[in-house]
Amino acid sequence: MSTFAIPRSVEWRETHVTILNQQKLPTVTEYIDLHTIEDVYDAIATLKVRGAPAIGITAAYGLALAASSYDTESVDEFRRRLKQDRDYLAGARPTAVNLFWALDRLVAAVENAVSINEAKTTLIHEAIHIQVEDEDVCRRIGEHALSLFQPGDRVMTICNAGSIATARYGTALAPFYLAKEKGIELSVYALETRPVLQGARLTAWELMQAGVDVTLITDNMAAQTIKAKQINAIIVGADRIARNGDTANKIGTFGLALLAKSFGIPFYVAAPLSTIDLATKTGEDIPIEERHPDEVTHLAGVRIAPEGVHVYNPAFDVTPNELITAIITEKGIVRSNYETALPSLFAKEEHH
Ligand code: MRU
Image 1 (cartoon, rainbow, N blue to C red):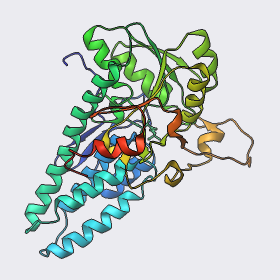
Image 2 (image 1 turned 60 degrees about the horizontal axis):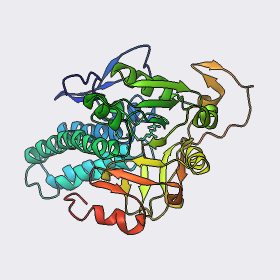
Image 3 (image 1 turned 135 degrees about the horizontal axis):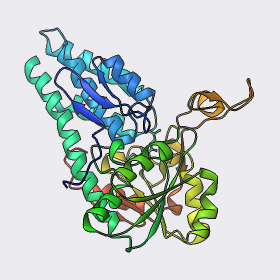
């Protein structure tokens, strides 16, 4: 994988966590150091780091970092503070289940710790493990997803489910990196993804750096583009997949799924098992984050709407399972009967 030049979005540095500031891309490539749990919370809440797996990885490092400075001799007190900090970080964003999954995995890792030192070390190791594991998981997702495409295919995506949204490779973008490695030509049509423009700023930037053929369109060009450019498939990431397959992803995803049905092209969701939440029965139970009205009334800091206008700004929508052709995970591709097929993916999982 020597040609893979995309920088990592999160790095553990012993005394702090360094992240690529995704708010500033693509014009400025800035790394920022997070020294406190408050820094980590802010980075997640303000989208300096975003994308479900990257949020989980950053939060895990944040919790391990916070715990490393607990000044107590009591294991019970250690656990009480860990739980408190877990709850604090869990409040940073509500929709991506990877946040809670990663935090809870850390808390569980020290359940049987007998000393404070052991617990502190275990937390750091577990956080590193989550990141290392995610890279491998994303690569596997990419291999499975690539099997669904033919050379020359034109594939549409929304938001950024790419390398910087994960440990590496991404989920929905992983097949394009693997195709590049194997010399298979695929073209990507990326929706700009208003209001925060993850498609224009991040997906276009990532894919161009890797030499993947990418064409940028605005969100309202999707139907025309599917028709005029004969798009073969749509592939997206996920923030949370309910037990029945209903999938929360970036706002606009649901509309793309409806378009895919109307045009008779496949609509794929690519996501790791850490994004599947068996405790959430259907999409109705997924909390949808609503973000600040300024994201809609302003573009790059410039006001584009009248002062005082009512704004509705949901960051995610839920695509019902019947519109999803397949869910692509590291354990393989699930095509239907999500209600029974998704739980069975966890059969051989150690962490669920
Ligand atoms: O608000 P964001 O940028 O965190 O939303 C990100 C998405 O919707 C991604 O598609 C999802 O998290 C998957 S990232 C591999």
